[in-house]
Length: 336
Ligand SMILES: [Zn+2]
Ligand SMILES: [Zn+2]
Image 1 (cartoon, rainbow, N blue to C red):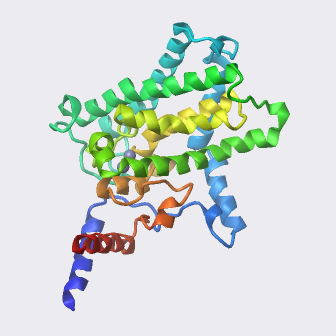
Image 2: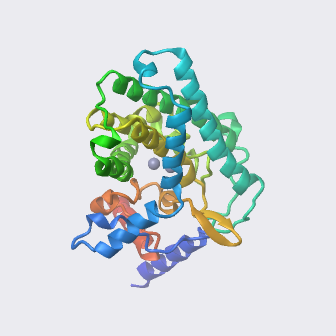
């Protein structure tokens, strides 16, 4: 009876050795889906996401700045024209270059915080036949900028055109300020559910081979990896925005939604749990949870805002026990 114990220990050791830094585990998913409800835990969950200077606040600011100064009005978006579509494309291109490029320079080129808070300390692949242009960063930049930003802009253009023409219902602040605010908070939850469904589909063997494999060229990830996807994946990935054709919203919600889909793909694949200043985690990036997916493939298809992985038994919470459970599932599958 010694063999299974040894196997467990060996796999546990391997799991621990594979990671340079692991954030606090077990990784928690959103408490709003747990029963009985724990009001204090729920409050802390949302306070961490909305009341501290983090991704959501930055995206709301970027959406406000864009809407006020860098977004054509609904008058203009009523009819398609290269002028305003080109301007939006350039704005999105710039946003992506600043976020992904900035993080890449800070964390990987200038190594400003070394391996502090870095999940996997192995270098990104400089060369590799599996990558377009034979290198991971070149490959990731190409697919992000050429395809990712194009689809991002195309869906955004479509949503603004729809809103200008009355197909996507418009919500003003004065209509219902509380609901207006709440829509921002609900957006990442909707994105999470949509992402799980789309991503799970991407792992069906046929779709994986043709489409999603491109994203999984990245076993170890960096800021340019997040939106590095096959054009067919971009085509499906951004369909979450179509919800605005059903639910009344404001252009600010559309901008926030699309930035969330594109820019946080970059931060969530940064490979670090956060940007550190003076040895302290000052700006949460993430996510170890999704990095586990890139390494092991058969776990964590969704993210933490909606616990679909828990529901379907594919949740890896970053602990040895969860890893052993994953191994056991694989052994079971192999025996069948
Ligand atoms: Zn995947
Ligand atoms: Zn990914």
